[in-house]
Length: 352
Image (cartoon, rainbow, N blue to C red; front, side, top):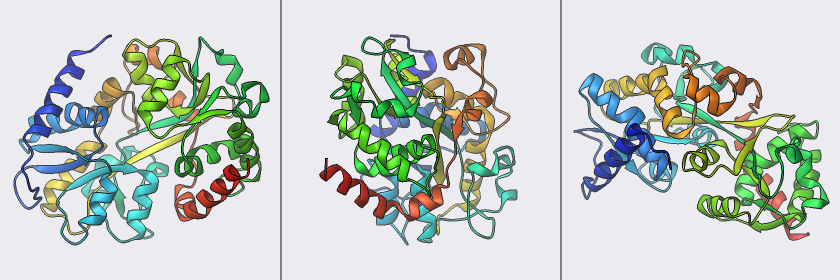
């Protein structure tokens, strides 16, 4: 297993941050508190963002690992305990629509000017409701001991009957957001025209050995060859490869892969707003995003971020070449129709 010094330090710093948490969190004084998913995500935020920010500005940032930062923001509405938190773009859209986020003028966070507006979470009047730190993508993970990369050069391959009992699949909440969206694109539609995508999703579902309930289970299924392939996250495959698992590869099919932007948001009424804006601007800048790529494989959103020769070799392309092969849907539309889409998928699966 190849572990860089930066990864080792990130893990140690993440563990130390978790152990030093007070019994009751308060965002009214002291360090900036940033809510993060746990595990590798927390380590990435400590090593790539929080540690360097403190070294540069003298302001301490504590990474607090929680199961779901969005749920924490909702539970603490009106009395926020965190200054910022990470979320998916859909979660950010939902929080913004529910008027739960602090917004900022672009001049308060000028580093966002180097991030294409298609990756911005913004209000109707153009104010920033979230900062884009990086993105991953949703492609097809293949166990090359069980299948070849060429077998999955198209998303349509997942519906081929020859893979019956040999594929993995995630839960309907994610199928509605990710799988159906990219399958619809492959079928000639998009997130607003999903008839073809539903047919492909039904075909894929008939080939599934197991619907997994966790990323850990999906990792195990792929690593052990319990499944030959499944739609999966680029950063999860990156982590497997960094841990020495070379027989699991991520494929960007001919129709492209789904771009998954993440957002960092601040709860409405957050204290220390000026410090928070400085922290958010740092997150949007290229250098910490480059470090996040080295640690966890997240693609920088800032157009000024540069890939080292080593990173380009691992990706097989430049950052821009990756972006050119990804599909960015209308996440606002997906978020607005998520409940009905989940219900439709549940019904389809029940009828198989």
